[in-house]
Amino acid sequence: VQVSCSKDDPLLALAFKLEETQFGQLTYMRIYQGMLKKGNQIHNVNDGKKIKLARIVRMHSNDMEEIDEAHAGDVVAMFGIDCRSMDTFSDGDMNLAMSTMFVPEPVMSLAVKPAETKMQNNFAKALTKFTKEDPTLRVKVDSETKETVLSGMGELHLEVYIERMKREYDVEVVSGQPNVNYKETIAAKAEFDWLHKKQSGGSGQYAKVSGYIEPMTEEEIKELGKPNEFKNKCIGTNIPPEYYPSCEKGMRDAMHVGSLVGCEVEGIRVVLQDGASHAVDSSDMAFRICMANAIRETMKTAQPSVLEPVMTVEVEIPSEFQGAVTASLSKRMGMIQSSDMNDDGSGLKLEAQVPLANMFGYSTELRSLTQGKGEFTMEYFKHTPVPRQTQDELMDKYKLERLEKEAAA
Image (cartoon, rainbow, N blue to C red; front, side, top):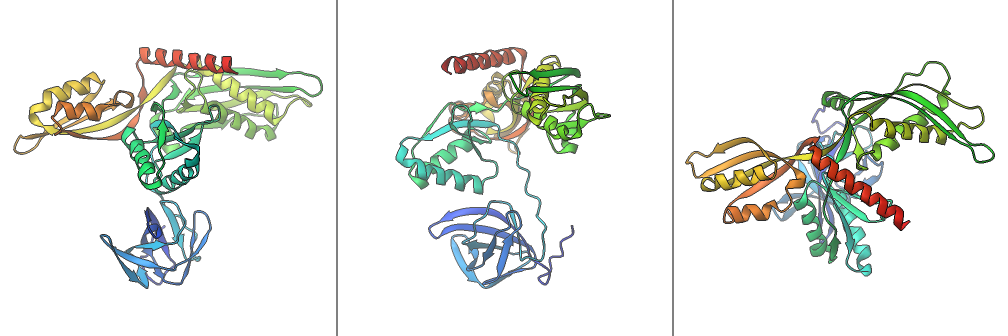
């Protein structure tokens, strides 16, 4: 949709940054069309909430200049607006949401909890605020361990938020060992023909599904916009049409917990071709369980593999430390992509692709190798298959954890 940038057209604005101040939340907003006027009412397109503009300010570094109105192209800040980062605002005549920036999936997780129970309220407030202002930060509660898990884009990213909890909310946080977010996929096509049958007095459970699973290419995933795909190619009514959504839900269940190391599954196309049902015993739950079990078992025969996040690491160092830093990256299984010397030959910029699991503690090592003169940045690149030995180690660790949980139960 083309935006006119005219002040006479309906308002279209994007909240791109949130900041906590002594007066409350300060929301930075860029106006793309229309105008903002003090006292007017605007609404959040993402959640439908209506807000009255009590105060609009233009920022000059730390100084705030009170203004009555702002037009297309202006960047302004406002108080008293409850929203998330990248929310779209309109004045009611337009219902278009602006596309948000690309938000990659988290690559590292950390179990966190407040050091004392009395800090629980402030801990919850801090997490709510931080996830509002930063879309790359995710919080979830592990269904099995009941731990609060903080996920983000790396070790430093999570450390910054733990430090902010202490500084801004006076919450001491106890954190566990960082966990790398592995994923699972398959490399070959495999067929399934699975029967789920359970009889325990009264109506039981009966469902049968058949079809195949196959790997998807990166291009197909990008085009689809989803990590996995479900295709229904059933002909006839061997599976009644009302159970098709349950089959798809079963497929989603199987994607959440993989068969190798219990991680999320991506890059799989599931094609349902046929099946069978029972007039009395078939149900939504029966088909959901059947489909999930069929996929989990079939994945084991489709050359499954574990994927690990690989990061693009940029290191800037004085040129005399090139040998030591290059050797350090190679030791961490890094692949050097480029090496650029600056004009006078005093500094060097290295770019490498390194598995995230091997990057723990790198900032300390780089400082010691370069006498504190080196610095690096790290950005998610993609998930790639782990070496066979690492995969076996991860599988053994997962089996051991499952046995421990079963013994505890």
